[in-house]
Image 1 (cartoon, helix red, strand yellow):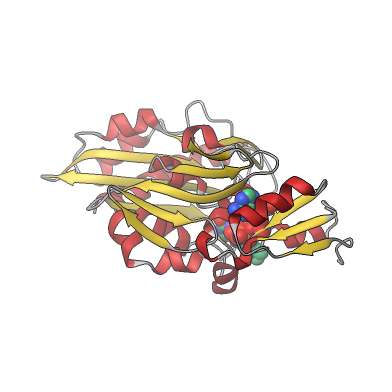
Image 2: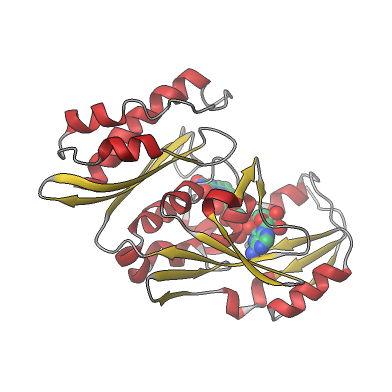
Length: 282
Ligand SMILES: Cc1cc2nc3c(=O)[nH]c(=O)nc-3n(C[C@H](O)[C@H](O)[C@H](O)COP(=O)(O)OP(=O)(O)OC[C@H]3O[C@@H](n4cnc5c(N)ncnc54)[C@H](O)[C@@H]3O)c2cc1C
């Protein structure tokens, strides 16, 4: 339970952090430590150098920029969950952040850390994908922006390369949209066995536009585009919505594990989708 020894650096700017990453061989970035510290303690990783981003103030905070909401990578989950700006323009992120773990983890763990970690059971990946977020990644040769559809590459793998840092996440405003994140877990305050993220715009009692993505139905979050299309024009009532989301699991490859087998997850996805769409549209 004691990590292997490492050198520790706590830079105060992104430039300094990038220099440290470039000059260190076996190095890991530390954000809130809610995933990395357990990994170190279990000695699943034993980096020689840790670069702690916790003192870089510019990586923390939530701001509006035109049609986008910009969330700094080091912004704690709790700030995202409580932000009135996020609630107004990206309600789905507020709702999902509120379901992450317990208050202790939400105060330490960060928005960017969770997305960079890319745990398929993590609750923020599917909402970011559903809302077409883009990821700003700083590296030795400057910054680049990666769309959510290209950011999640595989199990615990993202587009962030060696020597790079996720600095912020930009989310197109979905002002006035309803949203809901429906998560099923075996015990309270834990990762999703399956989760369904939905944002919906309703006009005259029917769904005019919808964004839907799935948590833990594969190695990466899955955008349910066929379901999004099937929902357009559907009246906001339980039976019509149930029919529109019935095929949401098609083409997904959910894992089988101690929490549930593949068939259980396939069934769960359509049940949770019905609940999530109803709640979002309401
Ligand atoms: C008891 C417990 C329960 C939890 N329950 C949930 C849950 O219900 N739902 C959920 O979604 N999550 C849950 N989590 C995980 C939590 O959300 C973590 O906050 C998150 O997974 C990692 O964020 P972090 O800031 O702690 O990152 P860290 O643990 O510090 O880092 C995680 C990984 O991301 C990399 N990284 C971090 N930030 C950056 C960056 N800016 N640029 C590049 N790489 C970076 C690190 O190098 C590391 O590999 C839980 C954790 C615990 C301990």
